[in-house]
View (tube, rainbow, N blue to C red):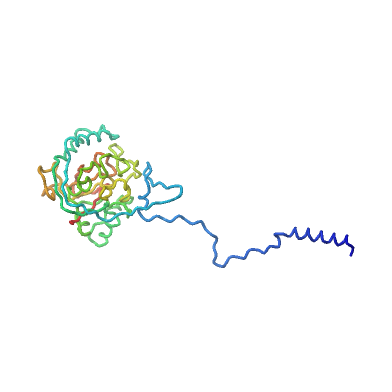
Length: 331
């Protein structure tokens, strides 16, 4: 064959080889029979109550960092030991005047008429109280915990089915319970309702804090309401009930949650409109009465009623959607 012909054939062969680059590559192997396409990994789910450990924004919702780093906070022990000691129970005239001022600063402050102002007078007179060691629940009793007593046949089912279904959530404080319901549960759980003095000592500390967290009011430290024709206030992140322990900034230095707001709490004592004069040791309240004492304010009450010294009262048979309880035990 002539050299010219050989050159033409070599050139055509080169062109053909270049055009086949990538076409002759073997096809990828088929996936194994049980192989599935790779899926994006989901962020791990937080355990119950972990959202409360996230930093709270102005709206009360958990804030997440751009890097999605979540710091979990241990929920804490079920009960807190309060050591023996003395504290001043009740309020002075100056503190009562301050409560009236707070009342008038509420949206419906014009409602703070004589009847409302007089209600703070039941905090008189301040007196020294000595308490022995006692345990108190870290949180209000939850629906889930109360239901265990119902299942044991020793507690009465709250009337959620009669229109209160939205409050029937395991992590919520149990509500719509009477004083006797609360007392019965605490006895089943191996304890009792706290006395009024024990409750106030837990909320105010030995130094006499105005609020469970300190002397200065902070609307994001408690699930509160307001004095107004519309009592509900979602500025703290919750319009009505909140899961127990949600607002960790309102925790006492001893580690006790929700002693202001969320639900007002039954305590053991009969109600009397004024304290007995003189000091007392482990007081149990009056020997008889028509009403029982309530403490702590709730999601429908404003800041004057969230103070650790504020007192409420109602018939022991009453049931409210903003009322629950916690238990105490002798140490």
